Amino acid sequence: MEPTANCLVTALFYASELPGTPLQTKNAIRSVAFVLQDLEIEATSEKVERQLEMQHDKLSNTVKSAMEEVKTSLESNVADMRKLIDEATVKSAQSAQPTAPTYRDVLAQNKAPAADARLLAREGIRRRQILFDININSGELCTMDDSAIFKSFNEAITKIDDTKSKERQLR
Image 1: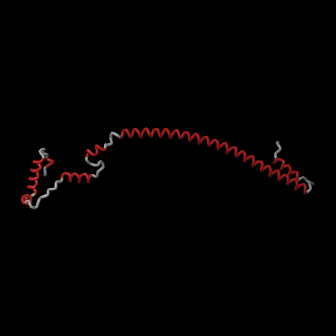
Image 2 (image 1 turned 90 degrees about the vertical axis):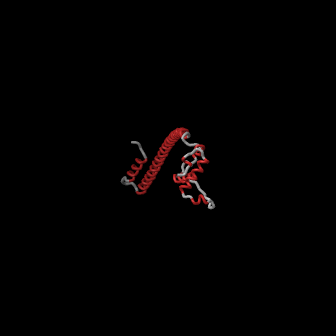
């Protein structure tokens, strides 16, 4: 059995209890035993503290190296993802270009690409609408009914437009 501080403390306490030992000697032996016991506790706590520090350092280094590996892995994955996203963006932009109307095409259609249907209908009516201003002093037009006015308007349009298109006549 290896002598340790704990064994020495136990032996000192037993020695202080031997019969015939004077009281002062008992107290001195017990005081030394208590001091040894405190030193053993301090030594043990220091030893445990050193071991904990060493384990903490090892763990810290392990975590650091693991974090570095994760960081490099993430950086390479992010770079790959950016490359794929850039390629997909370029392909998408290239495929979307032919389908998008040009400014010239929109102007040629003569309407806004996202116009309201009611607005388009109102504009169509206005395009076909003709304002017929009758001079009050003209007795002939003031006395005509609607069908006679339509007939005279259609005759005037026919004289002006030689295409004889039905769209240009009043109905």
